[in-house]
Length: 257
Image 1 (cartoon, rainbow, N blue to C red):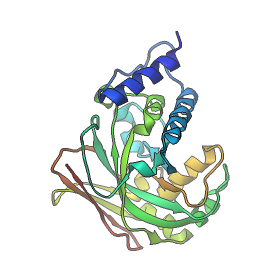
Image 2: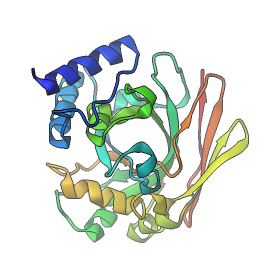
Image 3: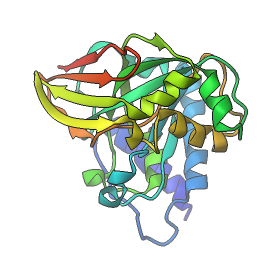
């Protein structure tokens, strides 16, 4: 039995049927991270063939404070697409166990080869923005391994990006000290700091570039991971991410319908 192929088939059925399946954590032949990234590349090829346009990458599980609760031990990366970028409002129809995450998105202004040092990474960031990522999970109760999260499209569903602000290397490093407020229907529900993502957004970006075959292209975007716990969303709610930093970053809002 081809365990990897079986899981790929199960996940494809779950995506089409909009339901969740059981994790294989601890099972014999459980999915490895290397195999999961191969499944991710296969999903990317399928989506590109269907007309989807890759625009960058997402980092997941960069907030180490959440690892124990989720049973994880490392971040992950996954593709994001123009087709998953949203603005203003988003339907929850078709989303499985949706949650929302306040993030920092970085716009890459120069080619970054795999393995470059953090100073080169910081200098290559052209702009930054507050963002809200909507994530979904096709594993019951959000119980999964890092490899299963990768195979599940990085649990990425949608991304709302606020107005971009130009940054230099010092400013992007300073985002580690940024304060985050996550607001639902006008009420503050969670707070966080830029340092929550592997020490800061530029550090999270450096982690990804260090292990990304092919590196990053100029013009790509990277969302660097949630600054707070991911929270469930319901239709009718309006969410806002307010990010306070040494540089002015405008808030971003997203309403669910």
